[in-house]
Amino acid sequence: MVISSKFLDALTPSSIRSITAKIRDKAKEGVQVTSFAGGLPSKEFFPIEDIRKINDWIFEEEGGEAIQYAASDGYDPLRQYLVKFMQRYQVTDIDYKNILITSGAQQGLAYLAKGLITNGSVVIVENPSYPGALDTFRAYGAKIVGVGMDDDGLKMDELETALKKHTKGVAFIYTIADFQNPTGRSMSIERRKQLVELAEKYDTFVVEDGPYSLISFDGTVMPAIKSFDKYGRVIYSGSTSKTIAPGLRIGWLIADHESITKLVYLKMRDDLQVNNIAQRQVYRYLKDCDFDGHLQTVIDVYRRRRNVMIDAVKNSFPEGTHIVVPGGGLFLWLELDPSVDTLAMFDYVFQKNIAYVPGVFFCPDGSGKNAMRLNFSTASEKSIAECVPILGDMIRQYIQEQ
Ligand code: PMP
Image 1 (cartoon, protein in one colour):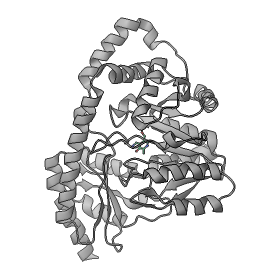
Image 2: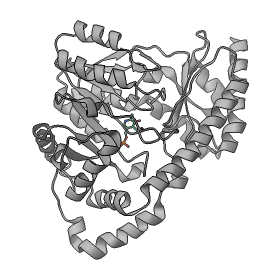
Image 3: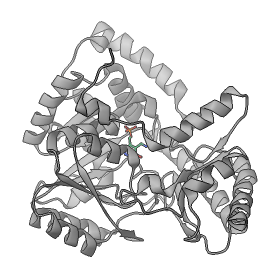
Image 4: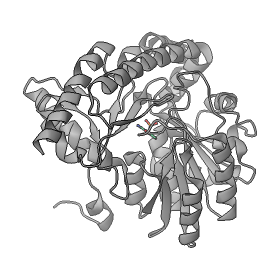
């Protein structure tokens, strides 16, 4: 007998997973796909030796306590360290009780969805946005409303129109303000301040998701929206997935003390606590190893890969391709001629063992048909320089054959 409920039966695999499955099928046939579709940081730079060393320290210093049951709100030394860490984003007005450690940012987003969305409530998001968040919000009953972006991020006039329209029940506004997934755009400081004011005016919350903020190619780290939050309207979500390693699954939520207490109760009902060892690994890595040196290495590599990708796109994609040049993060967002349907084109390009993510996967309103997201963090400069022109040729051929 298969388990069944309204909730379970409505769940579907993520749209990007359909691409991952195709890539896996090819791998089984012994064919290596050059995937620009993933959203992964590059594993060649994961600080394996440091983590190995840290594991020894943990057990030498703490013995069994390190793998004992522990508090649901998180490992206090890590929470305390993150208070200091958040100064990088100019978030200064917090203490460790404002922080809940989560199993990656994804778990934090799921807690906010479970806690704040009631059936039919609206969640306003950037259009396009991160499908992993959209799927989670939908799973807990949200109606997703997308608001347009320009080079300064979410458009505040459109946002206000949406807030006015949905007078009842905007659970929160979800934004990835720095080097957004998928567009690579960042929100201007002026708009960050306006966003806080709009959340206050329309009595809702901002969920600020910041996994890419430190992957900044010119080294500038923007003040978080949370740093302008005079009203307690912004819940910040952080993660070390893109800066250390995603498999450690360390993220954190920042909110006022009472909200954190409620989220801790939710966590107690969910998984009791985040893995002790991972919390210690991240704490000791940030505190005792060369996190900034590591970050700089990753930034330098990603910047070079981005540059190679942009040059290759400029030289090989059809005329009229619009490139959003990202100042950081992992992604390049491209808009082709409006007549091109990138979802329909996917299998045609995939014949050459190259993958990308079609733009529609990111757009809650079904727009983005002529867009695609390319990831530049995982492939080498050589592979990008070789494969992007093949992708460009395939797109030209596809257009000709239509
Ligand atoms: N938010 C965004 C915008 C992401 O792109 C991702 C992962 N790609 C996540 C959250 C989830 O990150 P984590 O590994 O911390 O759960």
